[in-house]
Length: 394
Ligand code: NAD
Ligand code: MG
Image 1: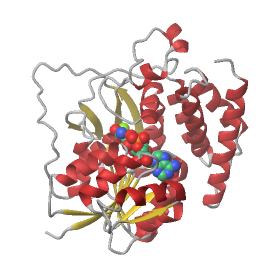
Image 2 (image 1 turned 180 degrees about the horizontal axis):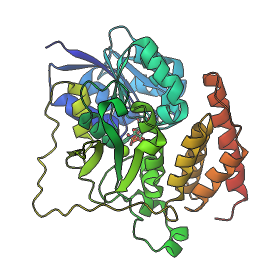
Image 3 (image 1 turned 30 degrees about the horizontal axis):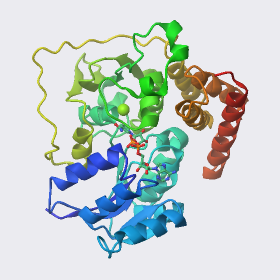
């Protein structure tokens, strides 16, 4: 078994920490060559002390200077770099085989693209890469000869339930539909009239999963599932009509593939991201993840259809996917702005779908010619959402 050299982008986040947890269970199998973080310098320094990477990347010069000082005695051989170019650098170093792409939001796109062009095995947690630039990214993966393994638990489940020789043609593999499960989040049964008053703390209190704050709000609004529908479209070359969202409050079935012969193949497990992370890190071998065995006794599994009146963000996402072009990037950017405003107490929960709808209505349609077109659409959508939120009564 040869040692796999890893770059972990977003090492200080929930996915990054879980990745390092799995890695630490397998001394000799992986070598951490590069880590990145943004503002949590103490955490990043502790990770560098434990793993002694060749590189640590932060966002700007001031953070780099502080980290350098913190590492002087505990990881003196770690080179500290900063900025987007440095993220692209550690994603494409020749000695790297595997890149965990776990930066949150649009900031994850450029380093993920760099890994694709460089032909790496990419463990893709940053779903925003596919939402913003699905066509561009998938072309880069093909052109660079990269290998893409999904980390998002639903897509990882689907990947596991598809035939190993899946060639990108669902119909040819006998697949009727992809059934994407969703927990329904903390507001699944909240009376609709109370949604206007819900707080960030309530939105972040996910019943089953522990996640970063942005994705937790997305789970509450089901925008997370909307983004995942778009993610599935690109990962599995699925038409929107081939993707169905199923609410499954227990989060035991992580998603399913429905075949033409009537078979439905599901992947089950405890809700712990170390399972998909370990699957992708070890692929094709199955390796220990630290996740306890699933105890099925006493569990009642239930399934229900999503209600668009409760979850308008899901409908907006299906709409953006159907329109195509730059609208998924607009949806993503407006959502990031609106969620940030909600988390900062500058906007109410119901302002999130309203701001996204506003930005979508103002967006230019048409296919992007290049990354810059998408970046422009992203910037404009944030400005449109922010302008809407500034005028909106909380
Ligand atoms: P998080 O907020 O816990 O961590 C985000 C990481 O990104 C941190 O390391 C942070 O330092 C880094 N980061 C943030 N902004 C940055 C910027 N501008 N430039 C460079 N680095 C930056 O997020 P998370 O929950 O770990 O999620 C990471 C990604 O994985 C997201 O795209 C999310 O949608 C996806 N994901 C997460 C989960 C989960 O269970 N947490 C599940 C599925 C998919
Ligand atoms: Mg998911």
